Length: 61
Image (cartoon, rainbow, N blue to C red):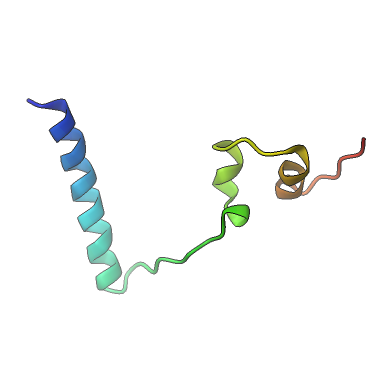
């Protein structure tokens, strides 16, 4: 079995499942600016001030 096909098939199934939920009104998608995405804190490098702001702590030099 082609591993790439297996992975893409899994993504396709999830994509269509979510799309159906949106069409049925069970899920509402909302745009969130990158600076407001809490999960982004651990996935991208941030400068110390932005990190402190997201974590609601104060930093001093």
